[in-house]
Length: 494
Ligand code: N7H
Image 1 (cartoon, rainbow, N blue to C red):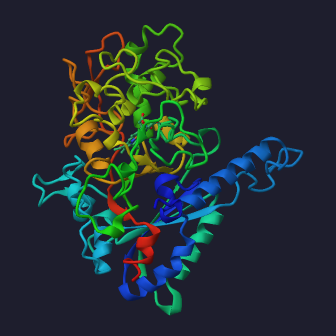
Image 2 (image 1 turned 135 degrees about the vertical axis):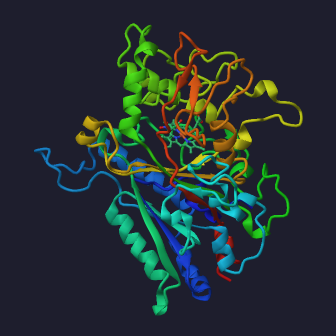
Image 3 (image 1 turned 60 degrees about the vertical axis):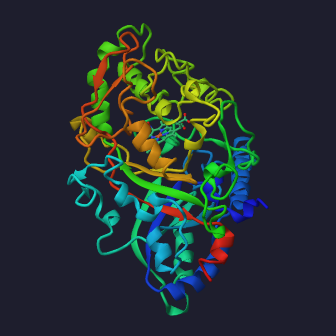
């Protein structure tokens, strides 16, 4: 009974996005919302539609590369139009627990973190804030996510090739949700992310290529029109979708099947400060790299686990290899050696987040796979302007920029929340070595911001490198549920 047309496209395919708008709303009139939601459903991009769109974009790019379609410039090289991407705009919708409650849905999705909301998870995630008990903790979050006067009941994701397409689609959505002169929703906030320009497209703001490693879903290969790639982890459908094989949670309502929990985080990044740290601390670490390019690039790569191009340290530890990085048959095909962090530090962000073979030594009959259940589908997008020359000069951030982090999973306590608390923030993960690996230098959080890692220097692997400060700062977010189309047609609009 598995149908791509019943699943929202961002979950298992990913909406095509150069621009993405997150429209957070409160439901003001539940009765009107339910009937207007019925009319919104045809606008929603399902997984089969998203697959088709990706295929069309690939065909368009191929046609452009072969000269069949112009590239948006004239003979003089002047830009004559967008000409860059096929116009697309996709829509998805997801609800917070408060949103389900506002719709008088009392069924329990059996995910305590979802039910309580992300604000109640902030202290455990080690987000910055004041107060020393769960009750009096005040996270240092943006006002909108504190949800004082305005609760967030849901989020509408609109993604596409340009602000023109995306805004046009958002207007359609808004018109649908205010049909018959009744606005069923109130805007709480609209956040916009965009892919970085030109050669940095696909790279997050620290400069590293993102979106390389995603798990593939068992039984639904080819979902985005591509074959599973070498090195790609295969996970059961139920790791991503509720009610599918691999989701062990009992007692969930039938309508939750084929939905997924969406974790949203606003994560500003202090880019000039990060670069300054790399410059200052990389000299001794780079000493033994004979033909080393830039010392800072070596330290950065050891913190991330990949070079800026995306080439993995596990395959090319001494020098970046852009050709390898661009080859999707090779750029993710590696396992770590659980005995060694010579090629890639245990604490490196991608090793902490997906330790590949590191945990095999602890597996047993009851728990044969210690990594798979924690793999997530990442769908984030950068936000904010490029670093200005003034910021480069002063080495301090003036304009907010970072990542709107989005991921999908069937259990928040195994996916996002687990990864942050148990792997990124835990200094003894991955286990098995005498010396603790330390924090994930990219996203690891400590309440006092005092962090360090080992393995940064491949000559002195046990040496502790103090990490000055956190360059990724949580400004909040929320946990949402992205329902199936059947659920949207049924309980949510009924
Ligand atoms: Fe990460 N970065 O630029 O350093 N991430 N991440 N992430 N991340 C990855 O392999 C980054 C964040 C994961 O399968 C890459 O596709 C930044 C959170 C996972 O090998 C880069 C931020 C969480 C993977 C970054 C951020 C994760 C991954 C390499 C915040 C979960 C795949 C590209 C601003 C709690 C690991 C790639 C694998 C990869 C960066 C956030 C998880 C470059 C800057 C919050 C599972």
